[in-house]
Amino acid sequence: MMAQTSAEQIRAWQGPALFSFGFRPFFLFGALWVVAAMVLWLASLTGLTTLPTRFDPVSWHAHEFLFGYLGAVVAGFLLTAVPNWTGRLPLVGWPLAALFALWVAGRTAVLFSAHMPLMVAIIVDLAFPVVLGAMILREIIAGKNWRNLIVLALLSVFTLANALFHIEAMRGGYAAQGAGLRLGVATAVMMIAVIGGRIIPSFTRNWLARTQIAARPSPPMQLFDKLVLLASLPILVAWVMYPGGTLTSIALLVFGVAHFARLTRWQGHRTLSDPLVSVLHAAYAFVPLGGLALGLGQLLGNPGAAGAQHLWMLGAIGAMTLAVMTRATLGHTGQTLAANRATVLIYVCLFASAFARLCAPLWLEASYLAGVLWIAGFAGFVWAYGPSLMFAKPGKKK
Image 1: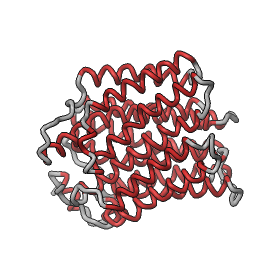
Image 2: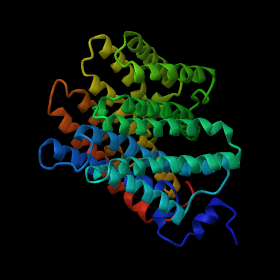
Image 3: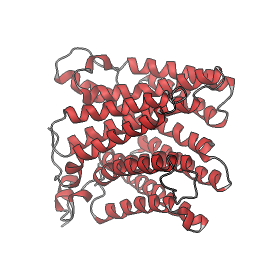
Image 4: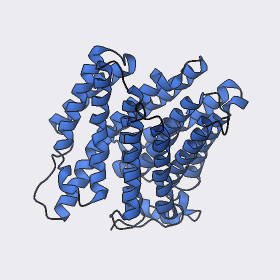
C-alpha cells in the first residue's frame, strides 16, 4: 500500500537514514566537500599539489564553492521545502540516492577534468542541476504551486551561469572573473533576497511571539519588499554585464541602502539572545554590505573588488546557507531549536572568515587565515551535525 503522507513515506524507507529526506545527504556532503575543496585549493596555492582539473586553481575554487557546494545546499533546501509548498510527497530512498550520486559525479568530473574529453565534465556537471530543476518543475505543476515558479526560475538562471562559467574557461578565459561567476553570485544573492525575505520575518515572528515580546517584523513580501526585489534585478544584471561602470556602481549603492532598509523592518536587533534567529539577520546583512562595498570600491577605482565580492560569497552565501542548514537539521531531526556553543562557534568562524578575506588586499596572509577559518566553520558543522544527518531518524519539530 502506498504511503499517504510524507511522514509515512519516510518511515517506510528501510535503507540508510541518510536518504530518508533531501536535506540529509546534500547538507552533510555539501559541507564535507567545501572543506575538502578549500584544503585542496590552499594546498595548490602553496605548491603542495597540482589540481587535475582543466580550470586554473582559482577558477576551480570559485566554481566548486558556488556551483558545487551551493548547488548541494540549494538541492537539500528545495527537496525539503517543496513538499511543504506543494503538499506532495518528498523524494526519498533510492531516487534521492541517485540524485545525490549525480551531484557526486559532477564534483568528481570537474576535479579530474584534465584527464577527460573536454565535454564530459561539462555534461556531467550540468546534469545535476538540470535533473533537479526538472523534478522541482514536476512538483510545482502537479501541486499547482505557481507562486514558487520564481524559485525554479532562479535555479534555471543559476544553471545557465554554471554553463557560461564552463564556456568561458573552455575558451581560455579567466573564469573566476568572468560573467558566469558574476551571474551565479547575482542569482545566489537574489535567492537569498527572495527566500530569506520569506523565512527571516517568519522565524523572527515565531520567536518574538514565543518569548512574549510585543514587537513584530513587517510581514513578508509587502509592497516595499516587492519593490526592492524588482529594483534589485536590473541592478544585479548591470553588475553582471558592466561590473566596472559608474552607473553600475551608483546602482549598487542604491541596492545596498534598499536592502539595509528592508533588513531593519524585520526586528533583528530584538533577537540577539537567540543565535539561531539572529544569525539569519546577520547573514542577510552581507547582502547590502556586499553591494555597498562593491559600489564604493568601483567608484574609488576598484580597490579590493575581490574582497568586496567575497562579502557576498563568504558572507551572504556562506553564512546564510550555514544558518539554514543548522536550523533545518535541528528542526527536521526532532531536536530543540536552540544553538549550542559549537553552533555559535561555527557562526563566528564564518563571519570572521568573510572579514579576513576583505582584509586580504592590505594583509596577504589574510587570505590563508580566511581559508582556515572557513575550514573550521564547516568542519565544525560536520562534527556537530553530521551524526544527526547521517544516522538519526526524522522526527517532529519541538
